[in-house]
View 1 (tube, rainbow, N blue to C red):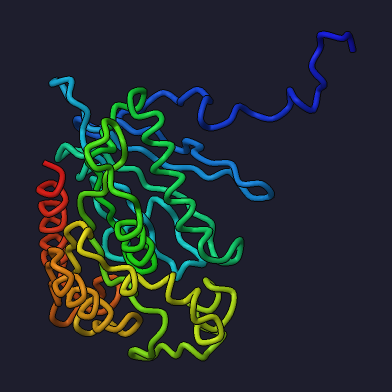
View 2: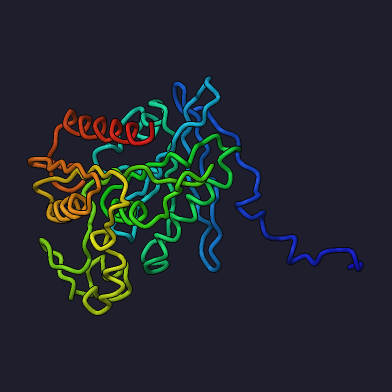
Amino acid sequence: MTATERPVWELLPVPHPDVAPLPPAAPAGDGVRLLRGVPYGNVEGSRPLELDLWLPESGSGERPPLVLYVHGGAWRRGRRDDMGLRLRGWTPGPFARIAAAGLAVASVDYRLSGEAVFPAPLDDLRAALRWLTLRAAELGVDTARTVVWGESSGGHLASLLALTEPRAEGADGAPDVRGAVIWYGPSDLTTARGGFDPHNDQFPEAQLLGAAPAAVPELARAASPLAQVSPDAPPFLLVHGEADTMVHLSHSEALAAALDKAGARAELWPVPGADHGWHRLSGSQVEEIFNRSLAFAAAAVN
């Protein structure tokens, strides 16, 4: 090796996501393009974190607003391309439908509880939003108009992101969470609700925190959207089945009440007869929930 040559260990790693070339966008339906498996973060000792980006074709030259989608799976499993039990068979799929309506969608990976404990997954979502903002011009998105959307445990993380991400305060190009669409998400990891017991170290909430919530009360509170509510919260749409057997309806009821008390806007939609994942609903009912959620997201950023 000459004095001017770089050692091979410096040459082997792939380029950092902040500067790595973007993959070409592929057609993904009428008026929609898709960038699949784009790395957005490198975490030492962990797998690369990736996202899929669904983009609407636009002839206006204006960058579309962004939906940052967070998948469910009890914080321990799940896939970024899954919007829940009842939407898996849709053609076109839900993300393509959102993009066709004029909103870009970034569906993101985050570290699961078997890989790292809280706040790791929330840190990953913040990193994704930072990366999307850094490369917004290349990607053709406007993160200054962002809505977060999540289902189940992803709704919990999306709620936390919406409630804790610093507001842009008019800064040009800075990310700004303008709204949150939350489907049956946990809001409180500190209190027994339904079948959840904060003293039980076998529950998914304990795996997220690394211990039973009652054993780490400060961490459990930090991980509870209910404890993060402030008057600066963006508008929330909280949709929750009245017959949910996995996440009790009171999670969304309590969060809506806290947002309302703080002077923030919250719409609570309890869905009669619906279990977790919109189980037991008809196809038309699921379509109605999706369409109303999409309309809320579009209104929040336009």
